[in-house]
Image (tube, rainbow, N blue to C red):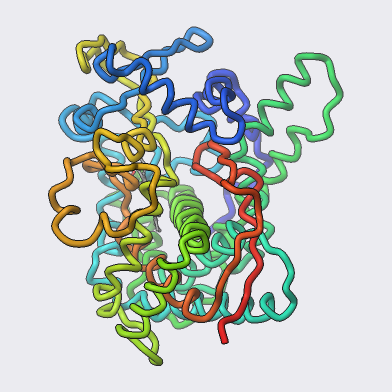
Length: 461
Ligand code: HEM
C-alpha cells in the first residue's frame, strides 16, 4: 500500500466555507448556547404544525429544508431515495471518497463487498476482540480509580471504540496514539473553530488559532490509514474487513476501488465507527450515573447472565435491559442528530415544493423528542424498549442509524460493542459525572457534550 495521499492537506478549512451547511447551521443554533437542539425543537413546535411539518430556512442564498415527520423521513430515505443524494461538503478531509460519500452505482460497488463483515454471523467472531479492548480500558480505569484524577469521558470511550474496531475489524493493535488522533479529529470537526477563524479574520482581527491547526490535524488523521496497513497483524486472521478491503483494491473488476479508496475506507470506519459509538457509550455512562437504579439493574443483569465468566455473543441477546439503556441513550442523544441530503429534482413534501439543490435536513433529534410519538420524551426510560411497546412503534420515529439502503452498516455491531462495554464497565466501576447539570450540548456534525463529560472513576468493592 503506497501512501499516495500524504501530501499537504489543501482543503482543511472546508467546514469553514460559507457554503457548508455546518457553517450555516451554527447561526441557526445560536439561540440557546447551552442546548442548541432546544432552539430547533422550539422552531419545529412553533412552525411545523402550520407548514405540513416542513420548515424552509434560507441562509446565504441557500435553502435548507427541515423535515420533521417520520413519513417524510421514509419518503427521502426509501421511497425517493435516488432523488436525494448524500451531502458531504466540508467533510471530505475526514472521509475522503469513502463509501459513505457516494451515491448510485459506485456506492453499490463499494458497499456490497464489505457488507459481509457486518453480518450478525460475524459478531461471535468479534466478541473476544471487543472484550480484549474493554479489558484494557478496565485496567486503565483501575489506575484512574486509584489516582482519583478527573477524566473526559468522550475521550475515554473514543479510545475504547477505536481499539475495538482495530482489533476486531482490522486484526491490529491500534498503530497510533488514540488520544492524539481524537484531539486532531475534534479540532477539525468543531465547526466553531473554523467559523470563529473566519469571522475574526473578516473583522480584521489577529487570531490565535490558525487554519494551519486544522491542516495539521488533518495531516495527522491522514497518516492513520497507512499506519493501519503497515502494522503487523495481531493474529493473521483470514477473514477480516481489512482483508476484504485489500482484496477489493486488488480486484480489476472493481476499478473504482483503487488504493486510495482502500485508505479512505479505513478513515471512514475510524471516524463513523468510533465517534458515534463513543458518544453513545459516554452519554450512557452519564445517564446511568444520573439514574442509579438503571446502573444497579445493569449490574444485576450482568450477574445473572454471565456472572464471573466473560460474556459471549449469546449473552449479548440476554442482556436485554442493558441493550435497552443503549437504545434509550441514542433516542435522547442521537449521535447523528440530523441527516443531510441534496435534492436532485423537484418534489413535493407535506404540500411544500422541494427544488433541485435544496439542502434537506431530516431532524432526527426532533422526532426522538416529539411528544407526538413518545410519552414524556425528555424522561430517560429504558423500559420503552422492552416488551411489546417497542414492536408497535410507528416506523421512522427512531432513526439513530438512518434508514433505507443508506442506513448504517455498523449499527447492529455497535449495539454489541456498547452493550458489552456498558455491562462490564459498570460491574466493576462506578463512574461519577462531575460536570455541570445538565451537561451542555454542542451540535456540530455529531451531538457532543459541550466541553466534554468530566468524570471520576470509582471502583466497586
Ligand atoms: C452508535 C453507533 C453508530 C451510530 C449512531 C451511527 C449512525 C449512522 C448513521 C445515522 C448513518 C447514516 C447517515 C446518513 O444516512 O446520512 C451511518 C452510516 C454509516 N455508518 Fe454508522 N453509526 C454507528 C456506528 C457505526 C459503526 C460501528 C460503523 C463501522 C465500524 C459505522 C459505519 C458506517 C458507515 C460505513 C456508514 C455509511 C453507510 C453507507 O453510506 O452506505 N457506523 N451511521
